[in-house]
Image 1 (cartoon, one colour):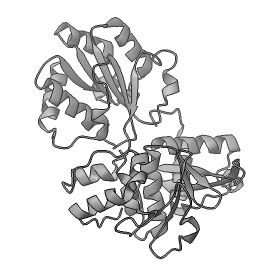
Image 2 (image 1 turned 120 degrees about the horizontal axis):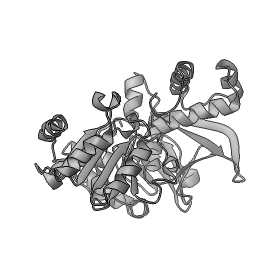
Image 3 (image 1 turned 120 degrees about the vertical axis):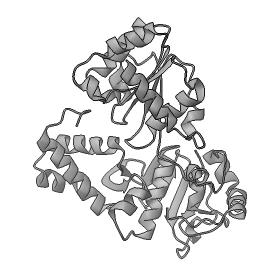
Image 4 (image 1 turned 180 degrees about the horizontal axis):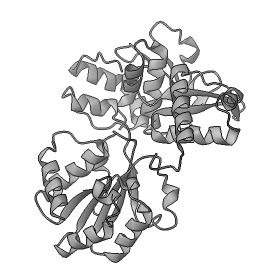
Length: 361
């Protein structure tokens, strides 16, 4: 117990509270059971530690426990550690990397039932779907997903500009004023296997598939070619694609036909432009803009890829992604239709700088 208390105190010393992610203001921190989900590296641990430091300080009522610690990997029981914590007055338990602990869902359920006066907050990666917590934890807690950093948050983090999140409806209604306000204040020149039961062969194929899709993006190979190359059937390939999407490094959109049905064609996008920059020295300008658009809009709404290459958000707004040299005459007077343009400094008509769509959360 002393070992974990010392680790807890050392971690809090290094926590900076000057910048906090958008989700910290949305979580109902007074609830008894809270689950935070998000891709690896998105900031879940920092979010937990910032809340502990800002709310409890040096109080022994709160404890941060990383369940990937070798102590728990060597079969020491979480229940015993929690029992001792509770006996010493502990009332707020923060469990990180819970997926590293065997039968973690059942373990948290027991803790929740055995200690009705103790709050439990846990963090897990995106690929632990909410439905896996049914029926044991499903209705007992509040679940939240921490998305990748928005462009609005990036501006705040860099100290360039502090803005409140702007709902998409409001942004599109007043985009000219919003972009002008931002441009008046700053000059923007920014380019933008413990969880699954998977054997080594399957893991290797998933990595190979991910690399192939990243290299070929936004084009998506035919399913028949994938099943042949990886010697797998359609069901197995789709399972690997689901894993890849859930990890949070790639998004795959199915094309919606003109009649509203779904076509058998897809486009793929790396999760964000940072991944693009780390993998490729040269990036096609339009695809860079599309990746940024899909990332930011997917984190605050639903995104559909239309048959003509346009995008529809929340079933209401249509977007054309492009650069200043493209012809946008076809959408000039079309209701709820906008051009999101990479390289345009401010709004003109229904043409919006693509960075403005990163201000919504």
